[in-house]
Length: 121
Length: 121
Picture 1 (cartoon, each protein chain N blue to C red):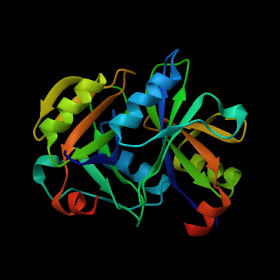
Picture 2 (cartoon, each protein chain N blue to C red):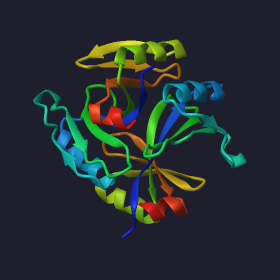
Picture 3 (spheres, rainbow over the protein chains, first blue to last red):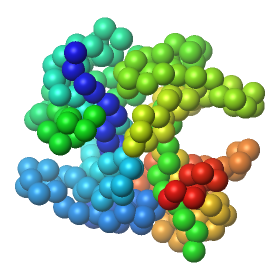
């Protein structure tokens, strides 16, 4: 059976100024914001992760501002199938992850665990 | 200056069946749900926190389902004042915590750090 866990908190911001949004959240959470290494992810700002705390990213979105969680899994498809059996629904596959909706209405994502992260979970 | 950090992820569920909502999230996140010790907090179900991961609670709410974060501080009033200077607004004081709204629109709470938590931060 695959491993999975809550890996990240994503702060979705409906904004035209992602750096300003990231600056607020960075200062609010006492973390530094940085641009992602991957040029394809320029609608994200990662906040540094203090030891023992959860990863946080600020994302520019077109929908209403909200907060969502990411679940990381070493086998995304198996995890999505497991969550479907629990009552979640597939909404959309984007790049490398599935957007799902919980029976209680919240959207969340299932992402592939990074090798180091999977090894330590 | 006071210390503060992201302490918890609260999964707000607009539901008439909190135990069922908590059961979904517990299974989804591979954590066990438990009722809070304080009888005044019966609209919460706490999920066990694996080592090194963030605390998660499922809350029954009357507003639309969403996810919010809690920031814990050893001095709540000082933290709220700090966040106001960053652009956040006070919305409502409830029991022991402040509900605030970020400039990017998300609601979040500022709660008092538990002694053990404050000592380790």
